[in-house]
Length: 151
Length: 273
Image (cartoon, rainbow over all chains, first blue to last red; front, side):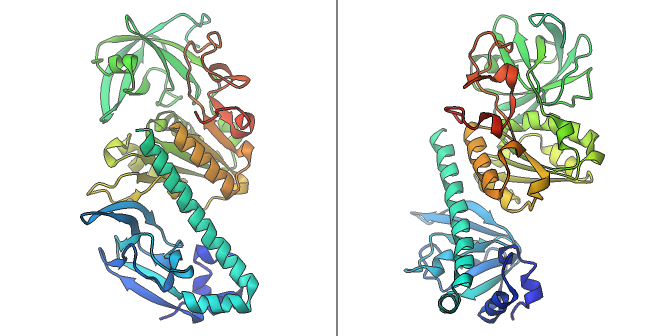
């Protein structure tokens, strides 16, 4: 199953993409569904797809020794995750689990990188958005750390 | 002002004590005569024999025969406040300071970022905004607390979500079973709200760390310095610009604030300490 361009335009991650860019994304992505409590991937898994959450809610966290999971934050519709798939060694820095019935768009990372080589503007726009996601997550993590340090 | 004499104390009787969270209580007070304040202004609350401390009322500024003060137990005086029972008498001085300029929000979307006990002055603001909601485009409250148990004013969120133009979002730092809303620091809620930034204002109130990271995120979203309002309730003591304890750069928080725009204070050394 794929999303048509008109559907992609409703997803906030794809703001400012041209129709040509959206056509490329539609061509190299699939839709996946997950049920409640289903794990999309574990921390340290090798990843091959960039994900955009379309519907539902996901929780993101890290694992500690003795199988303890720490739930750090939620992922909301329109947000990108699994960014590690785009950068070697493509190892996930967190686990992600569905907390409601969920629909995600999985974009083949290798195919996406091939498209970037043909269209640098497409690459720049996408990498900028990924960088913003990582930056926000880093800022939130520092916020959490400072909260803990001042307890 | 309770009196033209800023040192004169108005008596107020404790009517009810509400447990909001393990460390936070709301005291419902009946002043001996009507007490008026503007949202965001603060009062000095006196407990005879123990001391006086500044607090921003959390009740509606439209109601003058009742006053609600939300107090977090953090030290000697607040610990004594927490021991109060209905029927006991306190003293009020004020109101003091500069509150929220609600008329400047007319025609705009209002984004409110609150953390922990910082929701206390914000609740007063929400009451004020509710009264003038016909003049506002939208009001969005993003609130974060350490855990579900630390989330205060729980009935407020249900009530606000039923009011036209009002939306609320909550998050907790630490997940506990049974919590079905967001998890993460309060800035994560900003990814969801989709504001018309050019035609909105943002209000931030909470612990200094939260205010720092919240302000940074708002600036990254595109808010200008003058669009961000901060409630800088720090180190206030006399409430009258006399002791100098609350000096923040060139400002007295008690006289020039506690509400400032980020534009006014962004160059202040140690702003977030």
